[in-house]
Length: 310
Image (cartoon, rainbow, N blue to C red; front, top):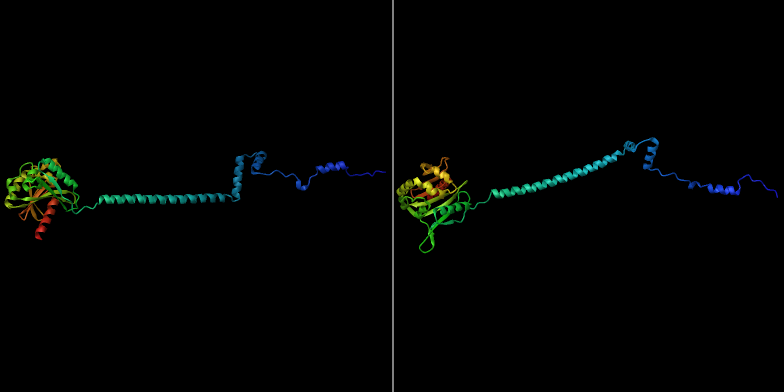
C-alpha cells in the first residue's frame, strides 16, 4: 500500500504545539501598577528623587482642583476652634459674674449693718473698785455700744447697801468715785441724789454724759466754775475714754470758754485742734448736763428742750 505524504505536522509535533498554546482568556496578566511602583520606576528611569516626585504630585493635584478639599477641611477646623472659643468666653463671663456678684453682696452686708434703736443698759459696780477699774468698765461699755445715731444707752452705777444688795449710786458717790480729787462740796450739796449717766451715739463717735437736777442754780453754777480747774482730769476719761492721755495733759491748764450752742449758753473746753473735750450747761436753771462731745451736747439740748416745751 502506497503511503500518502502529509505536509502538516506530525502527531507528536501537534501535541507539543498544543501544550505550548494558551487560550486568549488565560493570557498572562501584566503586573498591577501602584503609586509606589510608579514612583520607584520614575526614580530609576528619569533620575528623579522621591521629594521631586511628591512635589510634582502636589502640583498635579492643585491643577486638578484637589486643593479645595484641603481648604474646606481647614475651614471646618477653624469653625470648630471658633465655637470652642465662644463657649470658653461665655463660661469665663458667667464665672466672673458669680464671683463679683457674691463679693459685692457680702461687702454690702458688712459695711451697712442695721443698728438697733434700743440697747440693754450696762451696770458698773463702784463699791470697793479702784478708779482705774471703773474707767476700764466704762471703756468696755463704750466698745459694746452699737446703737443707731442719735440714740442713748444708759449705764447704771451701783453701790452695796446695808441690806446686802445693791442700789444706784448717788450723785455724790458717783462723782467722788470718778474724780481724782474730791469735787467741790458746794456743787455736791446743790445737786439731786438721782442722776443719769449715758452714752450718746453720734454720727462719727460716741460720747458720755451726765444729767442731774439742780436744787440751787447759784450753788450749782458756782460749784461747776470751781471744778473747772480739775474737771478735765477728773471726768474726761469717763466722758470720752477714747481720748488719749497725752491730749489730756495738753488741756489740763486750758481755761473753759463761753459758747452758745443750739441757742443755749454753755461752758466749753476745747483742745488745740478745736475738738470739744468737755462742755456743760444748766438748762432752764434746773438741769445740769455735762457732755464729752459737741454732737452729744447739741443733741441733748435739743432733746431736753423739746421735752420741756411739750
